[in-house]
Length: 439
Image (tube, rainbow, N blue to C red; front, top):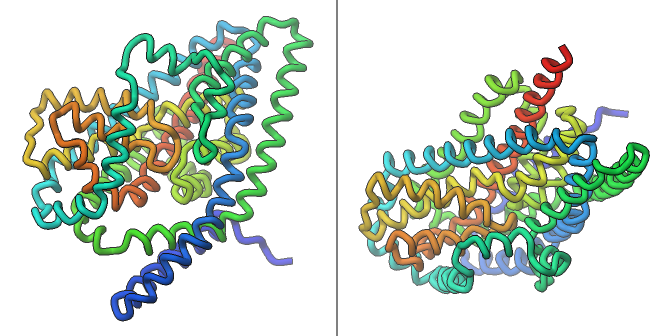
């Protein structure tokens, strides 16, 4: 039998086919508009639902997999005292990662000044076309309670745990933060059990993780077919006109995201984890492609855990602790994007943000990125809130909604890539610390 083509190669081929087919469709639409209109309807009726089959299979396993992997990761520590160094390293890298990302994004927007390249007529046209979606995001943000100690407690420890992560909406994921807290508590409690019972709890959690990972492998078999369907649908519905109109912003934002993933993260790998960035990114290529195509950190978490185990050989306790937390809290791509959007829209509306205000924006972008749901478009309501904070019309997000899905795919790739790099760095640091202690 011939050699089987790697999954990443098959997905990339599908991605290329989807992009080429979409561009051809847009070209035919310029000659004969009914063709484009027909294919947009086909995308909504056929391609989107087919892509959702792939996504829903991944979403199905998020809740049990987050719980099992995180609780198992803590339980494997054996002694609760070991959780302190693991958590300390993890959260320090999360914060540093997001702050660096926002700084890169703001620097890029200050250099390019994309808001000043947007014609007044184009701004009005974009607001007319996407104003309805912008208003919906503004109303969502208006319904959110203000940040306070009580709201933070409610966010992480709601009265109804199962109601929080199950959610009331069939079309959306529930809140994963309370589940993370509960999983850590379960794992911590397991470390206090007698050794034989702790191992039984850990074995049960590991079995759940393995079964959920099996479902992930089923889903990934669909990826080479679902990915081209989803990218085709996105490009056909968004169109190239809006990409050209917002080209300076899109290029600047994409360049900043690429610099964060392949620049900052490569330095971390080389300096902090003593790994070859080229080899590393080759190993995680299927994971990054999955992140790009799904636009969801939560949906990509199962694939991230599988990659950490199968390709990178990371410690199960480290990967099981860092990656579920990262999928919810380590949102460097999202934080970068939020900073870029606020500065871009401010420029478009003639609002000058001083250096001090941009420093505040850095901190707020990091905090709000943590609160973003790990699903497509989850950051828009929070961006509306940031715009209002700096006296920029929150409806201004209507300017970028048309290209949000494309950029969502890029920033999710950065989010997921940063998570797996952070897990690798933390794992290397803990191994080194253990070796030093043993010596």
